Length: 232
DNA sequence: AACACATTCAACCGCAGTCCC
DNA sequence: CGGGACTGCGGTTGAATGTGT
View 1 (cartoon, rainbow, N blue to C red):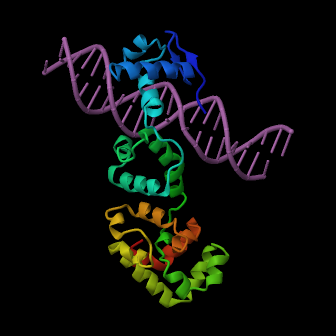
View 2 (view 1 turned 120 degrees about the vertical axis):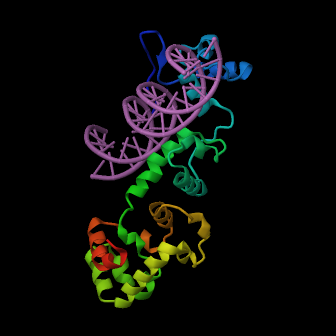
View 3 (view 1 turned 30 degrees about the vertical axis):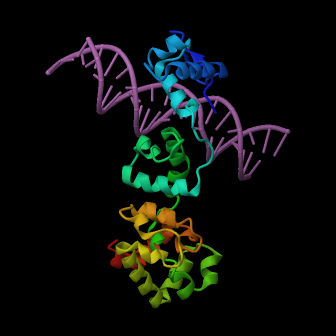
């Protein structure tokens, strides 16, 4: 997973670090501290550029580095912070002792952002209340066929009005989503982009958004039904 | 077993900001 | 004040590894 080592025309090495190089860098910084990165490799006896040394130290060798999978709590905090700070990875990393900005950036790009991308679509606005109470459970759980769901909704005006009502609640007050014992606090979502909010909600199996495939076809059907209400 | 495709993550690159002469 | 040197950050790359067929 590491680029193989190679040398440029100046004899500078790039690519994967060897254990010997790691030891040299570790020993030098242990003795002299992080001083001039540009000069450091010369005095440490490394055929690397200062940038490469700095990166290796900060992202890999620095004491206290924490590796391994991100926890659910960490994932949620990353999303929350990203919503506030954007792609300010170093600022986000300050809230995660032992994690590097590079780690968080990689995790975001490889996991969170990708998962979010699979979950777009207006149907995510349907609330969980509507599912067990007003729609036939077997029809909803059997598949994610958009016409099935659309037919269900078309046949049940009560359901439609409740969905519409809940959309309004959603718009003004996210708390309506969490009145069934969720551990998430309402203010957790204050100011959060809707997309991020729905991504977090989608992790809960009892929330309607998690169980439906957010296909483009269904989004069309949903907009057909709720377009007027929602201004689509 | 063999191949194709997807995922992971360390490392590189370019740029912007800061410092110093 | 201008310009070069240096640092730090965010985007991207690409080989190793994992997973599916």
